[in-house]
Length: 263
Image (tube, rainbow, N blue to C red; front, side, top):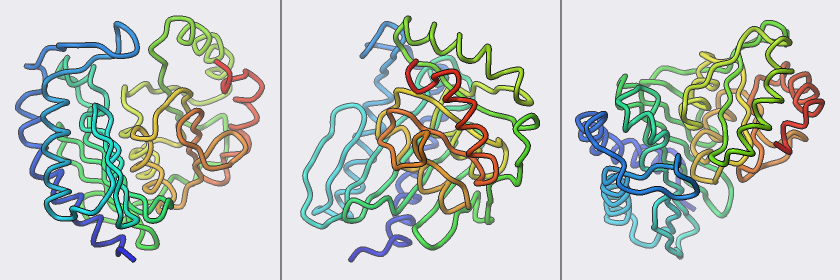
């Protein structure tokens, strides 16, 4: 069986090779295409980053599987599958805003085992391996100890389709008075990394994809947090709630009351 810490270190090595170029290109690379809607942007840098990440991983481990956001899907034979978002928060990247990241997760025999999220703008490296804890720049991190919903700083995001955005905004009107405040960073990966580091108390969003949350799932779990759907079950992104264990149930109850998982 593959060793999660070895896979974590490989993912860090790969992101370190790609991050400097993305930092140079941020704010200088226009969108050249869209996907699910006119606001779902793709750039040449997304494709370049994915190509670099995939080729470097396969050079090191040619029998592994790959699932990446832009176009790569490969079956493997090793039991390891890498799940890659080459640039999460592409809109931030296009506008030259911080909050974009490289996100690399890995599963071993279908179980989330590795999470690496690198923030090129600020130079932060978040890394976790199953059973080995979570770190930021090599230092251990933990989710916050917040248990009071009214004092919780919560991040969220919005879908690409206009109707979904409208419904999500309506629910947010009911959520906002019950918490400390809302943050909208623009990228699920960085929001999950910040929950793992205790910089945010919680995060929720509907309509994500596996590559949006694969790395963050391991980071939050290894940092002592709870992550899953509203019922606490594993999720592939349809609805994601990440929070400290002492806050999760109260926030889940609030989100159910505004039907946040149906927006």
